Image (cartoon, rainbow, N blue to C red; front, side, top):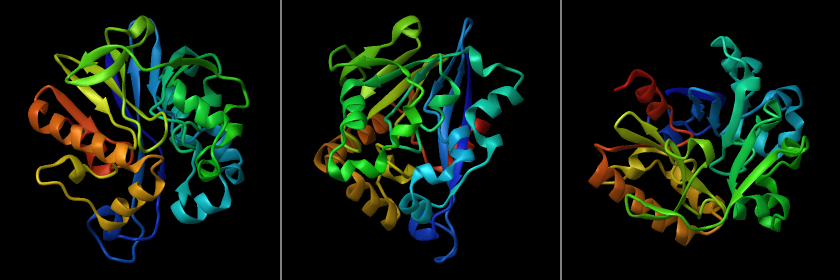
Length: 273
């Protein structure tokens, strides 16, 4: 099984080192949308999709507040489908999409893979379909207008490095598991992918900067504020962030953690450093 690290769109909010932790104060920061492409023997699978072709064709559907604040760079060549084709593979062979959550910058490419099973926690699908008033800006219903083949999961499953309610998934049950981490959104989950003798843990938006799971922890101030502001349950988010720090500290030789938007983590994983 081969694992490819993709960035399926980037975001360039103003804020410089207040967001990235480095560079000029007033420059634009660079945030990625870190997705995984899994080449299994009989199928392809994705962990998150980033922005998709329909987002590129119709940026307005993402909403003016999001586009003005986050300043996404939407290019067809950055979509997961285009990158898969560039590898000589067929997007139609993507049979599974595992979503950390359904925020618009994570689920935008679902329509590019209409025949894939879309694996998500039931609580997240419920939030997407019936969002509270404060949640409406984070979800774009048009990203699922094609009618995804949903596969939803309730809490319950195996233990994974001390995390409860882990659910192994279908034909990839030995290779991929959902590790629920609610807080950022109601049904947010990490996705664990077996990588040789260890694991990769795609933590989605459970944190935003690599320093948050370091010892001692640190995070640029704007990202720290934004994480709390956007959280559906900030107490749960903080609790799960502390558990991720413990996982990184105690099992860092077995599990490599990364989040969705840190460009340094993406670069390190691509180069194996």
